[in-house]
Image (cartoon, rainbow, N blue to C red):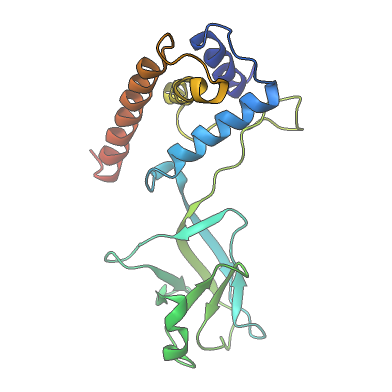
Length: 207
C-alpha cells in the first residue's frame, strides 16, 4: 500500500465509512486539499534549482516543466546565474522588458510560452542556474498509473490531507453538519498545518 492510498484509507475512517465518493472522486478531493496546502506558502520542499545553457541562436531557454514561479535568491532579489563565474542577470517584470531591450545583465519570465528570455541575445554558450518554486506532481496510486506519487512533504504530516478531506466532506455529500465531525476535523487539519508552517519557518531560519 502506498502512502497516498493510506491517506484515502484514513479519510474513510474519519467519515465513518459514510462516503459515497468513488475512488476517483476521493483521489480528486485529496489532490484539491494537497494543492491548497502547496499554495499556502513557498514551502522549502517546493524549492528547486533549474539548470540549462544559453544559446547563440535563441534569446531564451525553456522553463522547467514543473515551473511555478521564480524565487528570490540573491539579496532578496531574483537573479539568474550565468557562466562559470556566476554572473548575475536580474529577472525583471515581463511588462518592463521593453525598457531593457538589448541591454546585458537582464532577463524575464514569459509564462505563456514557458520561456526565460534574455534581453540581449547571448553570444556564447554558458551554463545557467536559478531557483524556483515547482508545481507538485498529481497524487496517484500504484496500479492506477505506472508509478505512484505521494505528497512531497514528509510522511509524518500526511494525515493533514485526510483531515482536510474529512473537513470538506459534509459540504460535498450534503451531510448533516450538526451530526458530523467536520469542525473537529478542520481543527485537526489547521493544527497539523500550523505545525508544518512552524517547521518550515525553522528550516528557513536554519534552526
